[in-house]
Length: 59
Image (cartoon, rainbow, N blue to C red; front, side, top):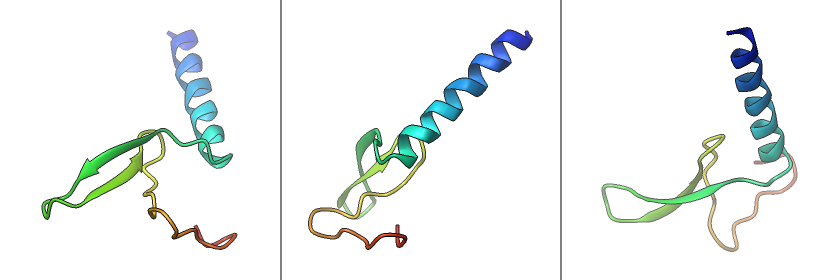
């Protein structure tokens, strides 16, 4: 059982590292108004869309 918990921990650390490096796993979703947006499946970050890049430290 401890080995399984260790593997899950290692996966979560790797996932958060990938997201911190900016390698998100984007998925497209639709809100109630029918507008499309993207969120990362690993960390939940929202994509600001094309042309809306936050300055360093602002995202």
